[in-house]
Image (cartoon, rainbow, N blue to C red; front, side):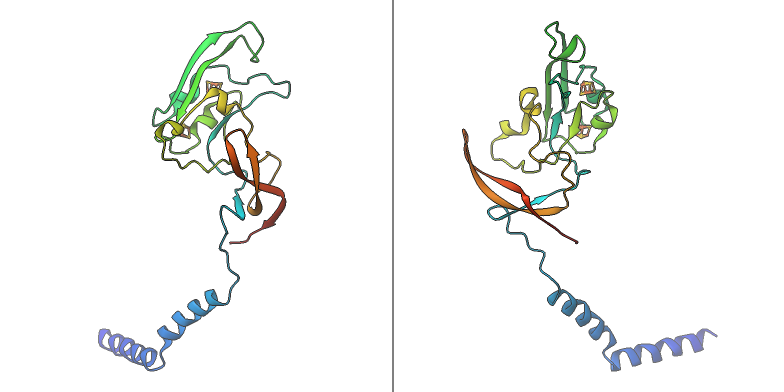
Length: 193
Ligand code: SF4
Ligand code: SF4
């Protein structure tokens, strides 16, 4: 029984190598890629990738439509964080900047230690903290890897209603920090990977 199986396998291998079947299979894959549409993105000067809504990038702290801070400084996000990279210091406030009289005096995150796991987002009872679609975080300045409340309260550059999963044309805009390259969301094409 074993003997006949071994002979069968040897015959099969011989036929395969005589007909170059593995080579033909490999060339089929190579040629398939050669003639398929290119998915190279001319990033960042000409095009920018707009991630899907489920993407987990840099944190933002949300506000209500009336501009009140949703964070009630309960510290659940920092307790849920597996790498201990969120610091929340609460304070009492009666000026009405938040939805309650307890707001965050300090809310900061160290992105060098962040895993972008989303546990902080899941733990938040008011949906204040959210991982946005900001992914351009590389820097040579270590101080730019720590984000504080005042920066995180700014809305993300891609509005929530934009579905994403496509490539937008890039455009140059002047800001107080110099010239920035931003995505032109009006000119976006869908990509299928
Ligand atoms: S995404 Fe994960 S690792 Fe990063 S701050 Fe939130 S809980 Fe911590
Ligand atoms: S972001 Fe959410 S979980 Fe974190 S302190 Fe504020 S309210 Fe609590």
